[in-house]
Length: 575
Image (cartoon, rainbow, N blue to C red; front, side):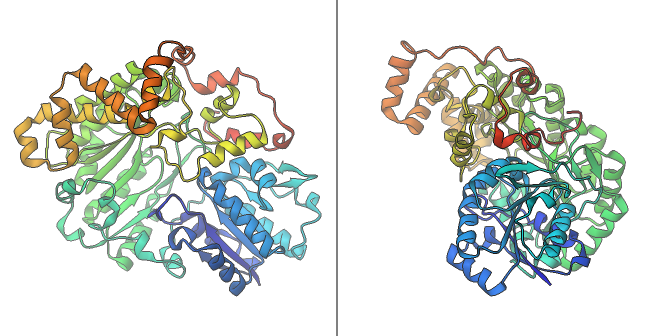
């Protein structure tokens, strides 16, 4: 029997509540004829020391350690872990899967990973296991692995990609019963009124949010499911290995949810795919089932062009309490640069419809695309100011992260071409390591794609948020705000809104400089950079897709990426 230890990578300072779906899919998807025994060690949840990891490996004695790394910012951990494993268990084969394999050339040359499995891991991993078994886990003759599609490994010390594996139409759900054998299921299947929403919504707004639910569901469990995979879009800040969009057959989906509901007393379904609802017929059948069963539900990511009034009305009647749109921007210019293929009007209309039918929305923005400026930020504020909820009891949340240039995205390739990321193996690694434990809300990780100094734009997230809070106060009136809104943001908003717009904007800008960069940098900005060292204008005139721009900018393909460069392109529809 082949023993395989699967681990995930800690994502951020705290364990994620997103279930380990990739791990679940691998365990279920590997060919059972291979006679494998799997053990999953949830590093993200348990946060063990390396000595504890060593003890686990010693007690289990795996032939293969499979590492699931879905976030490129986790690269530094992968590097340290792989070196630790190689030093202590040199004969164990290390295999990496997940989105991080888009930088397989860097991983194979800078870590001790033996193989990278790209795209959908299950078929390629099965073929790799079979080959390793036949070779008695001797991997010296790498040439013989070239016929396994979807694999990347070192061949004559150059990362070699065998080509994309054939895509499958299988969409596996999280097997919660299986995961319960290895980790704390309560962390991934929380109570409806538990921590999941309490860490995403201001504590003073929770009563209004929970009033949207059927009362009988509040003490039940919530579960994450997937009704589809892929996306109909091709945004320039996004990467994926899966091409196109596929919805699960609705009867199969309903059967899964019914079994899940009966086994775990589920009162809330969280659709976690990146593009919920694009298949209207399948979606309608699924949500009709949820409506009949009086189960509340939410969608983590919906395209604005997916919805119309009939759909939103239908979804609300079927128990929908929350929809998150990847609005990103309400500037036509920025949407074109992003290649969202969505209009400002569609973004605005989608949010307005949710407000009309009392569905909670977290408006997700993304600041700092190439071409972003004061005008485009103001356009976003003005458009979103028309979408404020009439119902003062509905929570109001806006998310304002910075653009993060992640490998495999057109934005990342553009950054390489203009010199923001050094086009060398060491240079790329330095940039990727700089993202370690950084989230997109931190301006320190942001590559400045604007014609302003970083100090000049540090206030943008606060500016967007406070301007919208000021509009919210104006809409509902000061006395209603004092009576119904207890969160600090509204107190700050009241003070902020009393100042003339130009004064509050200027004060906020300089306070942000001091907060992030200190007094000295404020004086440098005012008296030196703005007078003697003004930044050259470069990005402001950008008004088309970043992908179209960088395609016309040649770059030298290095020796280490000559076989793996194709992974940077992904499999986005129509590209």
